[in-house]
Length: 254
Image (cartoon, rainbow, N blue to C red; front, side, top):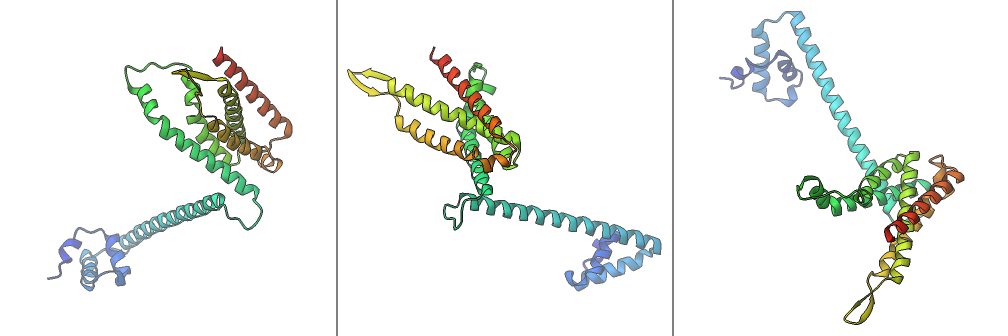
């Protein structure tokens, strides 16, 4: 007895037609049982056409799904190649504008992941622990957690808001690191009669160099052209942010 005969009595007509239309993909016994079941159902020509139409619609959905999957895979492959090219230090030609934009975007993405990693537990404590008390000053503390991923995304997409967010953030951290470096030079603590710096100065020097270098890149004319940022808008952004940082630091000191 054909093992498929009983099973195919509950199979839809369109699925039976799929088996019949693709004989190379099924066992001979399965093909025989599907053909016999179609004959036993004594379908009218109209019923066969409806089943065939349903089968073709299903096949179209499958092909569209495969096409979508291939498109996603191609995009992921292209994005991976772009990221690899952006971070590859060995380049045969000059550094292009596209590569500079990609590098800055990746840098901000890394910053975003860093902030998520370092602030996740503290944020969870503030949100879900009954003993936690939220201080308004913490808004500034958590601001990079919001700004850096948004800046990375919009800068990558070449949106004007992306350039503004990136520039404001870089100006803010650059000015902050410089002011903190100056402040650290004047900070000393006495422990056991020994005078020593309370803050490692190299930390501020290294961070300031990295941030200022990135700020110099995003303010170059070839980068600003991609975001429709003129010199006046650039200067206003730099001056406004630097002034805000100075007043903020003065407020914290006093």
